[in-house]
Length: 100
Image (cartoon, rainbow, N blue to C red; front, side, top):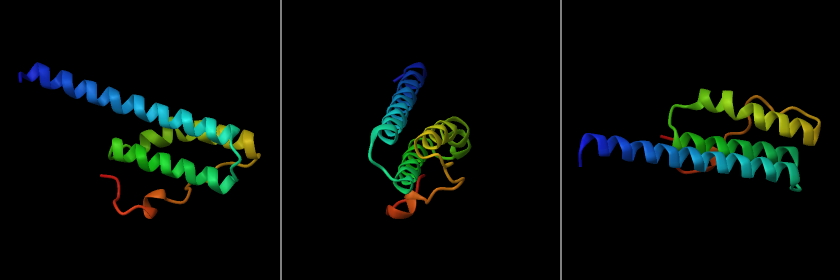
């Protein structure tokens, strides 16, 4: 496989991961808006999405905080009238492996 083909394959894989993360975030936001969740459960959902994002994109926690945290914050404030805590419980603590 040529260098150009490898780069093209890497770009396709990166785009696939981005699309999946967008889907996951959008689905989670809709679930928070329309579901019968408590504030604690919604916060846990955000933590789980963050864990998934860090598994897809290791070392991109700042990007998550800048791009997705404000969206979740807005939805949770609208739904519950309370802000999302700055540091929700870490979903990764519940799983055997940490994001790499």
